[in-house]
Image 1 (tube, rainbow over the protein chains, first blue to last red):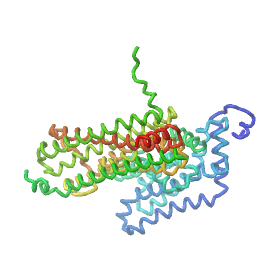
Image 2: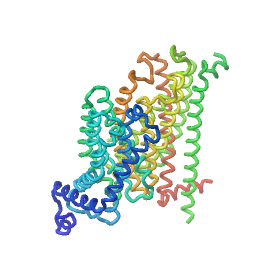
Image 3: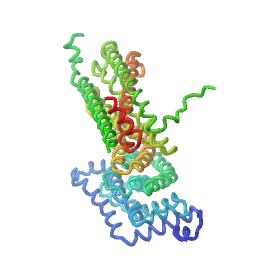
Image 4: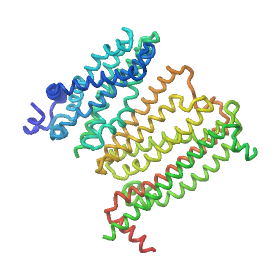
Length: 237
Length: 51
Length: 251
């Protein structure tokens, strides 16, 4: 049953996993209703990536050199731009407050929301980046490591971003503040993600960087929903 | 070391004094700002009791 | 039985305020004296460096500023943790008071580092690990202050910025490690700020004295700022009124 029904039924606690499942399904359904919004997000990524050759010139060697960095920075920015989706409308119409009051653990519900956010925002980036990578002249091995890195890294971006989004709920200050708060936290993801591609370029496997990203993802999966839940409760009080 | 040598700092005077002078100015600004804030806060405190 | 000082007595803004008032001048004077000693050591006792000439003397302001900038962030994060754990206003006010001074020292570290880098390594900004991490630290301070500023309700501002500071504190080692890794990958030989570990002891002594000077200065300024913050935030309470009334009555 939904958290709202459970609360009405007077249940005092409910399973975390079913809370996650419910939240994922609900947010996916809601997100897929406005496919245009999701499409715009993906388009933003493509446009930003395309700006760089326009800015630095089409010389292949230069594009190959900056390619991994550009694709990663653009992924950071695209993720940043989409963060208001996680809590924005639920905060506005009071659903978030209901979730906080429900017997389901709030971190579980938030994990579900973040998972849905990544599935509709980050995953498409992972899928399309090999195509964009080819525009920058990246080789097959480099493209593989790029995609693997993004597959591990974009969930981290959603998880860390959710903390920032929760802290800035309802503030007038806008996206600039969120960027200032979150981008420093994104730096390690950027460094290891782009660094993995550079490692492949240098003849290594990139495995060390990808392992670090995987470790970071595990830590973020455990820690970010807890921090976000704390931040949500602070914002709701 | 003569006064001239001291200012020149072996040719690096611009860098050495550029560092220290900016640091001193920054600290002076902070001290002035904090003291202004404290006296303004004291004034608010006394105004509140006038009501 | 004589009991030790009950520190929790000072946990309320009202009782901490007079303590801060009394302590601040002591730290200010100590800081000034230490700075005089440190400058003397750094400029008149320490010898010229064999490789860097007189330019190295910048370390007597650069390294202490960097140390203090990192230390203040740790102390700030500690007070944030206290404020969330015990839900006290004063702990949050201490963190609020520390942040601008931390940002100031971070700026001084970056500025003096750039001016040290130019004659030593040929460029104002070398993207080495420590300077890049210091730059990110500056962003963390600005983020904390910007978030506080953006939230109108002081208690929500306290709690939200505390969460942010703690998340930042956990991330600082990760960020530093990743930047260090990035730097060694891209630059080959690592650039270190303090040259060989066999630094003349007098140079280390000079840096330590200046570091204490900076730290005591930071405490003095923070105690002043927290007094202002307490007055600003507690102005509706009776004791502030009594304080103001006593001040006026004494004139």
